[in-house]
Image (cartoon, rainbow, N blue to C red):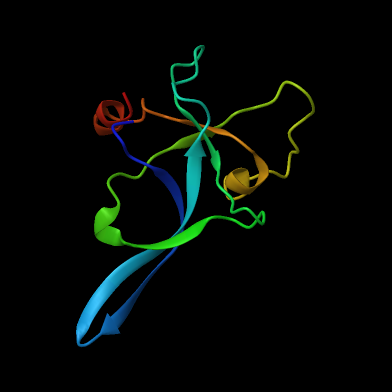
Length: 113
């Protein structure tokens, strides 16, 4: 993925320091699963990253460091059912691994290929 990292934006905020405004984002880092894209799908697989104590690996970054809004597709496990009450708002909290969708648009394809 051209040396880029994947993260989930949890919130956007800004602060002022010495008269200058800094637009930021609180993010949750994701880690790649494996060193290559998934053999069957041809897409990179990522999972939410955590610290040694099991807490989410969070960071604050400047919004200028965000390259592209990506799309993540849950990796569905063949065992079990998906509950009907699951919504798009729950997906990133429920599933453990995700495909990075490089087919969403031209720029995503170029970046993730």
